[in-house]
Length: 362
Image 1 (tube, rainbow, N blue to C red):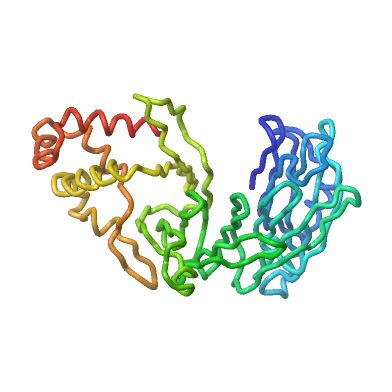
Image 2 (cartoon, one colour):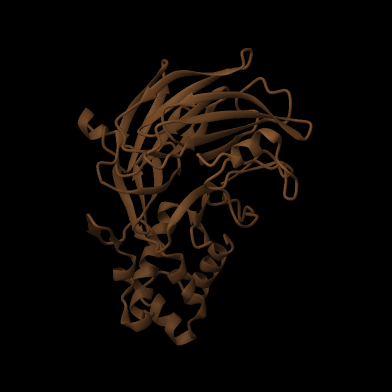
């Protein structure tokens, strides 16, 4: 795994070893070489926190989560959280904290607070720079394996091995569960779209979005996340990151669309954009018209291909617009374009301009 503090410093954590390099071609410090040579230590998580633990007088901290991999254990029962400080081009080990399990994920909650997914627990540590040490302040149980952790302000999103996603809040010195998705999704990545909406990827190559039901009338309903979007992507997504592939400019005073990047195990990098309701409704009509005009390879229907399907449920795709299908409009001959826009409140030229503007997102 890769983590970075700036364009010049990066952390590298390959599976099977915990190692961090200053940059390509430079050797890591001796402390990390010792980890590489230890055959019983496998890296289970790597995260860079740029000055995130507070009190760093150098270039920031790199926090590494590890697991002790033993052949007679089905799951690791011990690991470590290592805190390195970047000082004038070298990494100095400032602290190591022993934990009871593999550190699968790390995330910064706020300055000085560190979230760690350790086996079936989400643990929150506070960095005490004077000591220096990590002090355990709170933990939340009830998971299978906490594989993915994301934080936004005081909200925390947990992606579980089997129990989909859970929304927590750090408040009044406690980790409180606000809501969870009751579906049994095997998660591969999670992300915040905004304070109330969350994006997830699961191991059957599907994407889904769920939202918090703060306006629900009963506490039981508020404790369940509502799935509002489902879509078969066809790629095994293992990372979401907020950002864009191109420089987005304001056009006619309109704000750029919020975008989320995803990466897959096949090396695919893609974009998920949050659309305004009016644009979404318009493109949904275009998508329906295109699916009648553009025939799939081998006669495969677009609706069947994009349906959300896993071992536990099957559902029609909803809430997502297929950008690949929409952009296929630009390659159609003029006669086919007129077929698509028949019945729509726009001309083929107007629709082409809208799609070309969206295509600039990637």
